[in-house]
Amino acid sequence: MSTRRPASRVATPVPAENGSNNGGRSSIVLGPRDRLVGELYVEGDLRVVGTVEGNLEATGDIEIAGSGKVNGDVTAYNRLTVGSDASLIAGDVRVARLTVEDGATFSGKVSMSKQTAAKAPAPQPLHEAQPQPVAEIPPPQPVAEIPPPQPPEPVTVQVAETPTPPAAVTPMQKSRISVSEALNRTVAGPSQQKSKVAPTPPPKPIQQKGKRR
Amino acid sequence: MDVQEATAEGTSTAENGEVKRDGRKQFSMGSGDILEGKLIYDGSVHADGRVEGEVRVTGNIDVANGATVKALLEGGNVTLKGQVEGMVTARDKLTLGKNARLSGDIQARRLQIDDGATLNGHVRMGDFEHQASGQ
Image 1 (tube, each protein chain N blue to C red):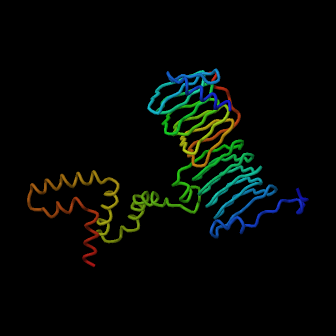
Image 2 (image 1 turned 135 degrees about the vertical axis):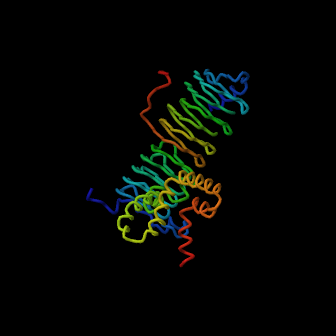
Image 3 (image 1 turned 90 degrees about the vertical axis):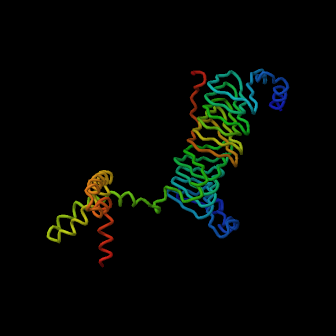
């Protein structure tokens, strides 16, 4: 393990040679005696002739050639090639194009939709767009917490805020009650303005405040 | 060479959709044929047109380009060139041609996927358990 002979070791190709076709993108080659344990993300192409234990992700092509062995998830935005003597034991394989040569060892869950491969893959932790459900849940809770500190304040403020939370939780009941009330009031005749106010309690107070201010 | 000769013999004598191929039967479908149900066949199957259900054969399965298959396929050598939806088991070799579109799990001893093929499913190689004889 510790005694590597530089002379006998196959030279790792210079990235510039392989990267010339990529228009400036990087190209990484893991030679037959190279070994990677961990996770690798490459903006460019990756060629594995050695051993990899971990997840690989490349924006270009991934080629597992020669006696290369990969044990881990593989994501290639473009093409994945597994050579005839190569081995890929993966959990998830996300690629746009796939070539498996006869004789190769290949196993895993393959996902080949162009959308998933072209766009940023789901496993990346950077893309977290899930604050919305969290924002939707809180509204009823803070309402219950807010009232305690506000009792000493003017009654008009409580009246303005209290109708908003229940309106969001149970709009159906509110609307039904208001409609029935509105009908009764319209029958009574005198208070048509009140009937209009009843069906839309939440926006009204806000608009009035804005007009006043 | 043997394969070519066998193919020539098969096409020449194909009349009832069943031909002899190297002494083994072959069930051959045309592009306008439709097969629905479960087919257990002691021979090879050339699937074309539309196939729905289950196909288990002792020989090989060949799904033609342009065929639409929604079925469980099990055979010795399985070659897919058309659109297949369902689990595929190849006791020997599974080949996905460049125009193949497979949506389903794969179990095969050997696997070849040509560039251009589309695959969505779980791939498992080796450790094949003979299910054809049992079922």
